[in-house]
Image (tube, rainbow, N blue to C red; front, side, top):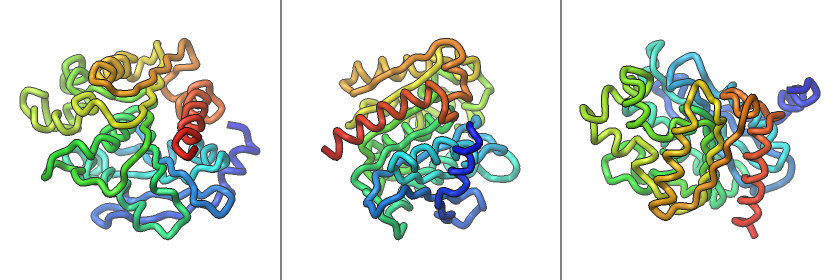
Length: 272
């Protein structure tokens, strides 16, 4: 990121909020663009294999870029696995749901009829899951959402948890959900984005064809399942270094440019 842009981001007004008080990770920061508003909102969800050591700072580059483009950004953090945070099932999901719903408690000029959920890597899974909460039955973590999104974006996301577990048993997905799909089918049924298709609004998936961290199969599988169920999904595949895993959170990257184009077009459709 260029130094002038970094300085602009440091000067961009943002306010820190708590949406819970069980752990210091239950917090988020609100970035507001210039103008009186009300502003369309993008909720950003960081990745990091759902493990401690990653946080909302990962998304600050694209948060600053979105704010400059006229979007309010709600950049959330949540309890993760490890370091005594108590994350995993169901705490991580409860936190993400509470963070999104907390938008209604903010005293800020926000257009809550125009909320997009956006996440990277493990955060892509959480963003798609949060976008699917209206489909959850009573008693499930995250059921009864207070916010109805109009779009969802997953950047190099882990969008099919069960298949990911089968390809990598004992990996991060198993740690998140406490075991395999065979051991906890009820958890995968309400946590796996691919099990909750289709969504009632557009979805964008952006993934690198050579991503060595999260395979592009994760997005291809989700797109195929969603389209078969009648969902509106666009999948953008990026070759070579343009699709490298960490490039998605670089506001100067081709990966991010594809998100911005789609998001601004989506915003015009909704508000028009």
